[in-house]
Length: 330
Image (cartoon, rainbow, N blue to C red; front, side, top):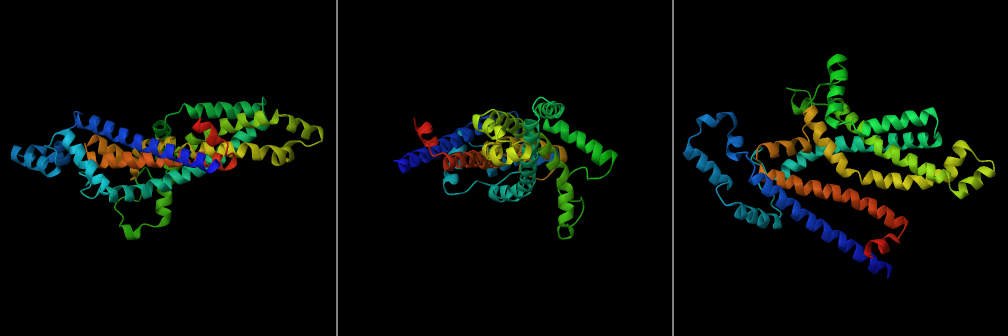
């Protein structure tokens, strides 16, 4: 019975992601097809005045821009079924290769921000929860609420101004030193360019984890078994370690996995501020320059990325408490 419920639960998840991917592709295609952006002009760039009308027609025919929108979408869908995401107009290379190269850079950025925001946010939440109502709790709450309402791009610009322009500790932007050959780029060069974007995402990301962990710990500390443990003489770190920590780690971990959407959205803004050559930067370029194949490919990939995070969070709950399948199937 339990296995049947799990199969039903997983089947429902698969149907939801398929429906979501189709809806996202249709919406993205319609919005970009009827946007005021001229793909040919964006493709040619500054040399547009030198391009004749005949050359414009040839470019449109080469990229299939002269076809009706519905026909273009159907052709793209047929190619997608065979595993072909098309060719990027901006990078003049297969969309699959562009996503692969750009995501490698974004993955390093998001992984660093995801790890540090989770650790720091959890420690801050535990610290605030253990000191409920005291001055340390009020300071941490004010700090987290301020971060939760702080735009990512604003914080990124502030960090650039302080640590790059005024202090000169870190580079202003890019993923590697400008003008340096790829074989001459060291790991330290990449890490040095990664620190400020990762710090931006980490600082913003701690707020939700810290506030959620704080509230969960406060609820745990008010429970009957904690009151009984205190009556037995357990207090402080000993009480937290033996009775409170296990009850607040699971919600924090699942919330961290469920934050993939916020992490990806924040990376788009951070990469723009720091001109970091990741997938978020490619997303903005594809939207502004009318690169439909690249944009649709990134939409599919980002949706799967966010869905995988939510699925991991659900699977963690499913392993710990199998009764969750009953709630989702009712």
